[in-house]
Structures are given as structure tokens and as C-alpha cells.
Image 1 (cartoon, rainbow, N blue to C red):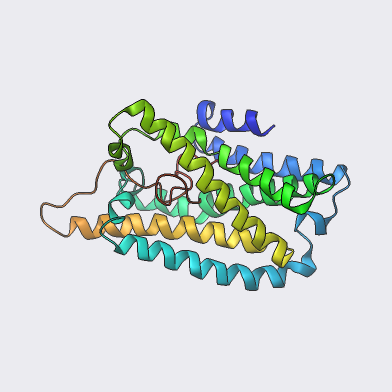
Image 2 (image 1 turned 180 degrees about the vertical axis):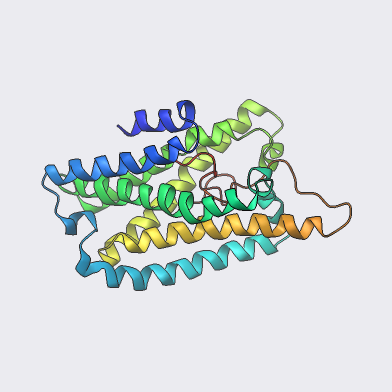
Length: 254
């Protein structure tokens, strides 16, 4: 189901149908997990655990936003935020990404699928460590197609002269770093017993990166002769991949 979903949203469906598919897939996986015997507690959606998830999630969100702000302020990493796929859109489209697509179609949908349904299903038959490892690897693999799609034009692509080798390195880096982020999100989920925590951390990372990209573009426009670069960081998307802080493109959620 995940493989078919990934192909559909990154190769077949236009926006905003791909965002709607993210939510439908997450809801379908959650329903399937319930029929397979997973309780609300197993899925991280029990109301009694929401308060603990909120406390831990807000703390994690603050740390994530602070990390993004630091990266945006450093000359070495600042250029990766200057992406026209983020900076060239109007205010209405930007508001849609910030209010709907990132928090709901990306953060909520991915956490329901990976740290909710899949983690609960795997924990029925495997240990906690094995379940976290497998869901995190699948989370990393789900970012391969968007990495390949948006590799050209990204400043990170200029770091390797051979395009083929550069793509392979980007895919490997994306898979491993996003899998690492998946482990952190899984820790938040298990620590708080609630999906609220990883959803908040995930959304904060992506929203703050998107805002940083737009703020840097606005600042660049105010400086004569300064322009945002055509490629760069994918500020809207997770979570952290081989291309610095790339988590999910506004036009392509995973």
C-alpha cells in the first residue's frame, strides 16, 4: 500500500489531489490496524494520553524550530533555504501550505501512517526496537522519489560533479537521515504514548523551515542585486534528509 501510495503522489497525482491522498492513505492504514486488533492506545490516539503528548510535543517543537532558525542564520546553510518553489508562490498559496498542507497532509498524515498504524502493527509481532527500525527505514524510503524529482537545481547537487553519483549519494543520505528523524519521532510517540508529540515536532520542523525560506527571500529582495537561488532546501517537507533539512516539498508531500 505504501509503495503504491508513494508512486501515486509523486508520479501521478497533481496538487492538491496528492495531499488528499496522503490523508486518505493514513486513514485507511489506521482503519486496517484497528481491524487487525490495535487499540487506540496502540495507535497513539487515546484521548487520555493527549496531554502528555502535547507537553512533550511542544518542547520538541521548540527545539526543532530553534535548530531551523540557527541553520537559516548560518552562512554555510542559509543558501539551502532559498528555493523558488517556496519563495515564488503568492501569499494565498503560502498560507495554504502553512495552514493545511504541511500540518495536515504532511505531518499528521505521515505520523498516523508511520508512527501510528505501521508501528502498532509491527509491535504486534516484533519487539519495540525492531518495529521502530522498520518503520523508520520505510519512512526514509518514502522520501526517495521526491529527492530524485527535485535533485536538479538544488545547490546540494553542485557538490558532486557526476550527476549520477550525486543522485545516488542524495538518495542514500536522504534515506538514512530521514530514517534517523523517524527514530526520533518514534521515540516521542513511545515516550508520550501519543501521536500528538511527533505530529507537533514534525509540523514545527517543516513550518519553521518554510517560513525561514520566505523570510530569507524577503530579506534578499530588500538588498539590491541579491536574489534567491533557483534551487535549495525544501523547507516544507521532514523532516531532515540528505539535502539539509529537506522534509517535504510544498507540491509533493510524502
